[in-house]
Image (cartoon, rainbow, N blue to C red; front, top):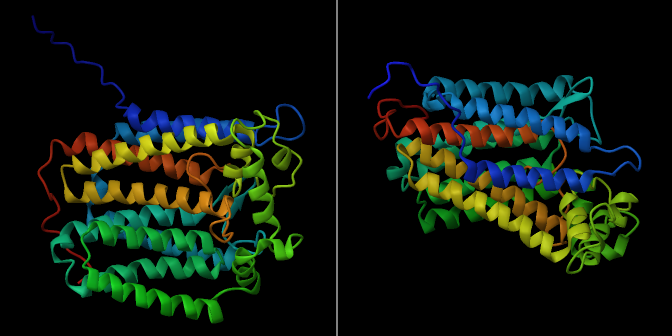
Length: 377
């Protein structure tokens, strides 16, 4: 028997994406909570998590396939450039960097939007040209698009997010099938750019951070302080940790910015090796699901966009954890879903929402629906 009544549409939720991200977010809130002893970032972060979940639900329910269109992608790119340029003109410096727009208690970091924009832009570009990636011209063109965003972020200055954007571009070039010869050429270009940055682009304190990375103990009270305290926090967690809320390095503020740039170290101190293994397993589940969605994508754009989101999250995790355990110089990089802050958390759940929507609605489309669209030469 058939019913003529319309079925009530249900929200589409990919629990294999949402649950790991939600678990990581809650672990982060537990880490930054002071449990009644002084001011805590936890209530504010709970509010941002609720907002981010609403954003995920909204985007996963909507048909986000319009993001495949060239005018939409280019409009996002133009907006990202305008926002980053506006920072240099109108934003007040915070800790020496013009990286945030502040509206009362709310701050917005345009670099977060730039990351999502770059992923969409490269996904669009590569979806039409991945079979032609052997032509070095396409690497140059895509690199110019990326470099414009990277340079504006470097000028702020924000070395951490500039590195993340560069990693997104390089990672998406690699998954598109770049040749080994071109990869070697890119490596040589990278060495030249790094040399120019060292002598002309980096601020004195940024060069000092990199130098202190080699031997942080040489200046424990100065440039090596953050890295040294982070290593102490990670090591003191041992196997089972000191217990939730009992991290002395973070709660006594020996570890600066423990709620953002060094939250991995604060978590490792309280949860120990077992907790770190649990945290990394949540990221592994999230990454594995993103890789599966990319393999099953209906269009080239969907596949590249999903892989771009995977590269974004993986690069943040690798760089943040590397900084916290002393393998990389301090650059001020957050870890996805866990670090305190609103704009990056909303972006991360928005990215998952777009991936969910594309996977849902892409099944009803033909491959390469944008075959007639062209930009970038």
